[in-house]
Length: 120
Image (cartoon, rainbow, N blue to C red):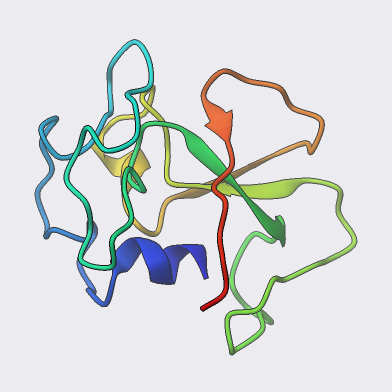
């Protein structure tokens, strides 16, 4: 679900295309920017690429083999959780729509946060 929202109907590495600049994404900098400072995607979502890593409900799996086909949260027997979007600390490849990593749920890092979502 996170990647679907980040892509906003596109198939490119970033919702705005193949190339990225710091006028579009907060990456390789010293800190986060406030919401709304960078361009919005066509679904009205801000700062999905870079800025801060975002928690997801998924537990970490090395690959997508066996993932729920409808995009529901993929809960497994590991305690590590998937984080998406990259942060201001990553380079260009680390802030792509498909970029993901993982960390312990008790991590408290200044480049890690969450996004409130509402079902429509």
